Every structure is written in C-alpha cells, then in structure tokens.
Image 1 (spheres, rainbow, N blue to C red):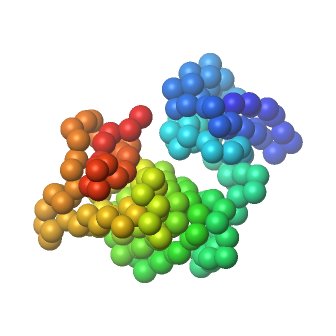
Image 2 (cartoon, rainbow, N blue to C red):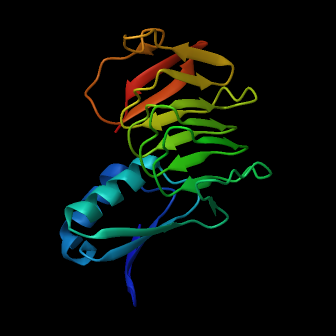
Length: 200
C-alpha cells in the first residue's frame, strides 16, 4: 500500500499483498491525510477486504472516495456490459432493480445490488455493499469462482453449475450457511454445495 499527495487530493495505491488488517493499521495514524478527495488505485489481484478497509478508513476520516482506477481494468457505466472482454470490470455505483449485466471476467460493484438486479460473470462477483439481487459467478462452469458481499442476502445465487435458492419468506435455506458474525460474507463451492461463511 502506498499513500501519496496529488494536486487534487490524495492517491491510495492498493497492491496484491495488502490485507484488510494491514491497510486498516497503516491508515489509522494517517487519518488526517484522508480527510480529502482520495483516488483509489487497485494493482493486480487485490484482496476485496483491503479495498473495503480503505474505503471505510476514508469515510471515517471525513474524506471522499474519488475515482477507482486499476491498470488493465475497465470501469463500466450503468448501461454497458463488457461482453467482449474477460478483464475485471469495476462498477462505481450500486445496481438498481431492472439492471442486467453479463461479463466474461470478474466484477467489482462499489455499492449494493438491489432486488431485481442481475449480474452474470465468468469470474468472481465482489459486492462492496449488500447483495440482494441475483448473481451468477463462474458462469460457464468455473467452480473456483466466489461471491463476496456484506452481507449476502440474495434470493438466489449461482456459482459454476450450482444453484442455491431461498424459498419465499425464508432465509437462504438451500445454502449451507456456516455460523459467524454479521458483515462481510464469502460464498464458494464446497463438495458441490454453495457454502457461505463470514469473511474478514
């Protein structure tokens, strides 16, 4: 992780080895520097928890998260779907009912996925807010894909070829949910079953 000043505010670079705990500890003594407009840069395969910790630290310091930039990563608008690309796509906003996005690679959503929204990705689906819409990670049979959100409260999620649905008016009872505190959750395939567990 690197934090440096720019003419427009601060620039925070998150690197592949950064963890949520490491970012939180590194930013705690620098809170006064985060009370401005902060541009986030994501380098390589950054831990989603590290991005979440950085956003939380900026907001706690009274700052404003600005743009999210990443090398070789496409930032897509609300109406576009990078169907011809297997690169990671960052959606810098939440998704409303009626949204449908199909992506060949992974997707990072910087907001909530509301009921009535649907996201299909060939890779991982990372939601920095609550997941209440329908998602399909690992479309095309990628059993190693994950779904990460805070929390996962969707009526249906798919990973690879596995489907988990919540019956009307119930919790996600067709998924095996491991006990743990509220907050961020990770869903993955384990023995052909979608398992959700608390994730820090």
